Image (cartoon, rainbow, N blue to C red):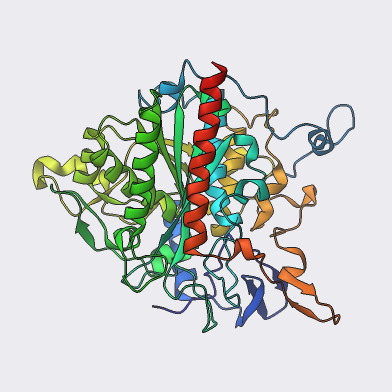
Length: 510
């Protein structure tokens, strides 16, 4: 695997830049990793060249005025309002919101109910970053910081009305470009596996609001944008029984397993499909309408498509939708066509300035279909799947202009732009409610006038605590948050019991 270059700064981590004349210090995963000369690497030069080629650069606009006509700061006004609007009952329209008509006439202008649902699923994907242990000097690097019962509570997502039922772990038998995190320590929770996401299911109240029992699978992405063009694997491998092919690095993470592994005796594919199948059968036996919504950002969006393909093949008739953010191309034209034939509905949210959705297949992609009469269908050409909702950094008055690959690709940037998007021809929504400060959690995208620190999201004292002797040491995890296959099996059984109890109580009250 290639060494990380100076441009490969992970944009989902707390990253601090200390300005000096000739050098840049990079803080990654709560520790200083390297002191590097301020010289462009090959990947940096390539990224700049690509940005010029694709016209990704954004010119600096006039200074933004954040004062209202009353003289009160618009930001101060937002600070005194809730971060979300009241939830609407969409039970009569859930099928259209879930993509039954491929979101025709719902994207431009963006239907408000759909906007809320997209943000909801985006926050489920963001949770896989916020709870992930990126600290390479931690024995738990690559795991989730919280057990599945605490995940949504710790991250403030209980409001969404879902319960986590299972964690998903993944590994790979091939070298993948920094897609899986590794601890520097010898004694670790796992030598080969990473926490890769989770399965959750809507509770009774949320199910009533959205008109069905919704099973969610959220996949984690781990890649800084520069790694996509520096180390990207371009080999296509067959999947299924037809002519469909997918990128082999994605497929390896989704299907790899090892008997000697603690967490990947079964593959991510086996884990997620076993749990989804169990939940579908559980709720269908009770006469409920069930849907499957799969979400992910970056690499997570690629895994979401592989998951949807398998689920549609194994569970025919189940409404399946994919909501992805900044996702790359995954497979060839036959893969796209099979997903369409299987009834999978895919909504790809992309930012115009983000390079990752253009990968792989920067040149050889779906645009070559115009030559099919001459060349025939090319089996090796990468192509995107489904409907596209395209956003633009320039639409928001709160975002800096200029070249910022990590910022363009950040999921929090995506969620901010979705919250403010109304249509391609209208300005940023003045009544957008999502907290603007979230944009700078792990990057530097907000204009300086907002006075929001760059990369502010980090644990107190970067994970250090003062012990009984007054010395600063690594914080010890709560025993219930230490990864344990046996404990997670127990938690899963407990979740099933809780869901069954809630359902039984609801039936009794009826």
